[in-house]
Image (cartoon, rainbow, N blue to C red; front, top):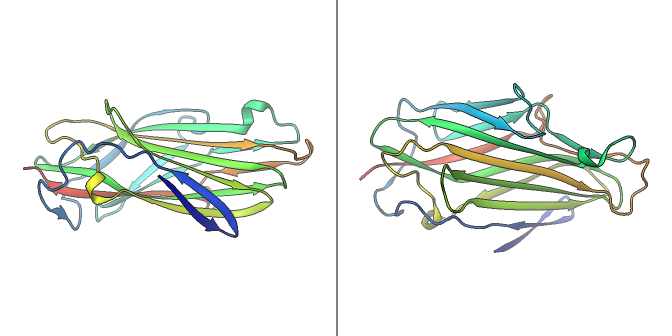
Length: 216
């Protein structure tokens, strides 16, 4: 499924691979807010964009939205950069503790990325989320071309019938994988470009929306 959007005059394309729902969407009605007792914690981090201690997770009191805040997630190219600097990635494994008798799915993700790109440079961000052991994941990829110097935002909403629910009674972790990458193209080697998911100084924050319901 290809979805075209315009952001600050730039053409941006998203490619989403829909995960097969683990649990039928019609099994029980969705809840307006999350149940009491929900807690969220980081199990592990892996990747060049998230060294230990550089990722923070915050769950709203309503239990229906959480944010991931990165503090060292920048890819750059040009100047004295090395080829390895043009790609950064992060794999976050989350433990979602919840009251017995409830389950959840990720229904929407709001991405916010900052890019400062010279003419001829392109930046690409990829993201995916899935449960431990899942055969498929929800994946999106966005690309933007320079010249560009601003935040760019996009929202990935999973249709209700395609939500992947955590199986009731199974304590499966939630995996969130992201990547940012630069292609220098025809830009001059002395010109520096970067793309960032770093959230310091009110920078980009990625927010994830939960859908909740009772187990049958």
